[in-house]
Amino acid sequence: MVEAHVKEGPADQDVIDIVTPKLELWKEYATQSTAPKINRRIFERMSIPGLERNVPKSGLPTFIEDGNTEIDLIGQIVGGEPRNAIVFAPGNVMLWHTNSYAPGHRVYFIYNEMKGSVFRYKDEATGEIIDCVEPEGWIRRDFLIPEPEDGLLWHCVYAEGVRVTLGFRLFDEHMRN
Image 1 (spheres, rainbow, N blue to C red):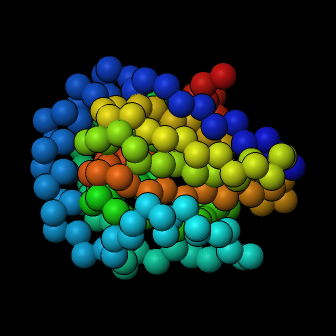
Image 2 (image 1 turned 180 degrees about the horizontal axis):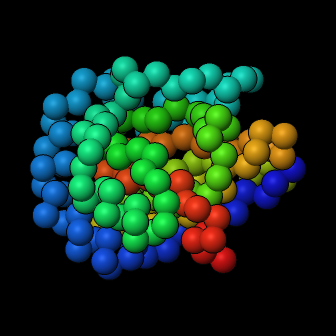
C-alpha cells in the first residue's frame, strides 16, 4: 500500500506567466458548460464506488482544446506530459476515480476564481477522507497515482466557482520531494 503523498503549494510563477493571457478565454468556457451542477451538500455525501469506472467525458466540465501551445510549453518546463486541461463551472464535479490506468507522478496547476473548491482524496494508509479546500488564485498540487497492485488514490473534485486545472504526468526525475 502506498501512502497518499499529496502536496500543495504556490504555483510556479513561470507557469502563471504563460497561462495568464489565456485565462479569461478559458474562464469563458465555464459559461458554455453543459455539465450538471450540484450543490455542496450533495458533494459532501458522495461515497467512493466499489470499483473503478471510466469517468465519461460527457457530462464533465469543459475540456480545453488539444494542441494548446501554452499547455505543451508548461509540460516541457515541469518535465512531463499533459494529462488534462479542464474548466469547471461553479457547481461542477469530477466524480470519485483513481486514474489507475495511468500511474505516475502528477502535478496540477489549479486556478480558482474564488476560494472554496475542494480536492478530496482517500488516504489509503489511514482510510481517512481528506479535503484540500482551495484558495482563490493559483496553486500547485503534486501527488502520486500508484501502480494498481500498490494501492489506489481515490479522489474527486468540487468547484465552488470557476476552476481551471492543468494536469501533467511527470517523468519521475521531476517529482518534487
